[in-house]
Every structure is written in C-alpha cells, then in structure tokens.
Length: 301
Figure 1 (cartoon, rainbow, N blue to C red):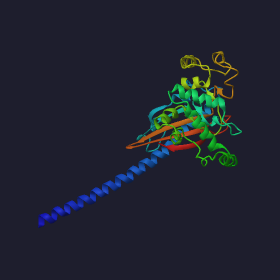
Figure 2: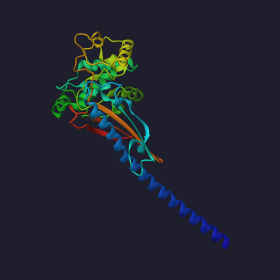
Figure 3: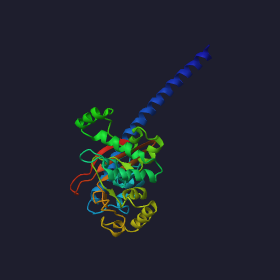
Figure 4: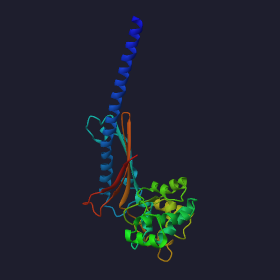
C-alpha cells in the first residue's frame, strides 16, 4: 500500500511539473513571438529608410542598394544594443511592385475596361500557358468591384448581375475569381499586383514575361534579349532606342511603361531563439525625399 501511494504521488507530482513546464514554455513562446513582431518593425524601417534615400535617383533598377536585400544578420552586427540583439537575426528583401502588371490598370476612370491593359494581361496569360479568357474574368471582376454603387445598381437592373464583389487586394485573391483554376491563379499571382491607382510597368525591373506582355508585337525571346541588355546597362528613360523599336502606333505610352517606381513590396523575417516571424508589406514612396514612405498594408506570413 505504501509503495502504491508513493507511486501515485510521484505520478501526480510529475504530471503537475509537466503541466507547469508546458505552461511556462507556452508563455515563453508567446513572449518570443511578440518580441519578434516588434523587431520586424525594424526590418520595415530599414526598407523605408533605403527607399527614401534612393528617391534622389531618377531611375529604379536592380543594381541599386534596395534591390540587394539584407542577408540573415545578427542584430548586434547591425548596431543594435538591446539585450536581445545577440539572440536575434533579421533578413529582408525589397521587390519593385511596378515590375508586375497592376490589375488596377484594367479599369479606366470612367469605369470601363481598358482594352490595352486587358490585351496585355491576355498576352501574359498566353506566355504563362494559361487560358487567355482569365484576363476577361479578372477585368470584369475588377470593374464590378471598383465601379460606383450607382453604376452597379444600373448594370444589375439591366443585366441581372450578381451583388458587388469584394475588391481584390493581394495577388493571391485571384483564387476567389470564379472560373480560374486555383493552381493557375497562384501561378499568375507571381506576375501581378493590385495597387491603389493605375501605374506603369518599370522596364528596369520587370521580368521578361511582363516586358513581352507590355508590347503587342514583342516575342518572349525578344523580351529575354531586351532584359539581358537592360541588366548590363539599365534604361535611363523610355525614349531609349532599345525600347522604341518595339513600340507600335505609339503604344505602350509613357503612362504604361516607366523606368522608375513608387510602389515596393517589403518582406522581412526575424528569428529569435525558437521563434521565427515573417511579414510582408506594400509601401508607397513620396515624390520627394522630404515625404515619408507610407505603408499601405502589412501582413504576417
């Protein structure tokens, strides 16, 4: 009986210790995650400072400091003196959001579909071996989400359209567009972006598929050759002869292509002991160094 009682007491005490250990570890993990989130603000501040300083340049290209990124580095090596600095590492990268096709361009100021932009998206789909009809589905979805309520009500009465859909915000929101295969939506998402206003594509940073999609008569092989030339010597303006030869009937215009950008996607990661936290943010740069770099949205990955 004495042995049984001793064994039972040991089991109970062990269980209590184990529960206490799990509780403490849970609290510790939550604390580490919270501290990592705070440190992620440093990654975002790092990106904003680089982009604000880079505003002095007239062009944005892939040889600039913002495009280099930050390899995983201990915070104390970055000059941080806090107690956590020797235990935490930070890494980050900046992507030019205007290196992608902006789906906001699909809808003109009069809330009609822009044919040039739709054709550009159609060509991008074709180059990615996706159905061109996806461009029409996306354009209709963008128009339905952006058109004012009065126009929506009038259109609904005339054509019995469904209720106004939720606007697309992230490229991954293409998964919610009816008629698009989920696997295809994720593939296309890597080449598009949704910004708060129409923007040109930056030819200094765009991938060859996006460059080819911007020019009606440019093949993918020609786009690859142009990108290779650009990587050796970036474009200073859109009047560059290397660009002009592919223009047809004045298109794309200087409102549709550019050599500089205002929108950037910032990604950062902080590792603190066992905790690893990642974030992504969309920022918009002002027209001058004096104006701040605004965060339009931020999410934890």
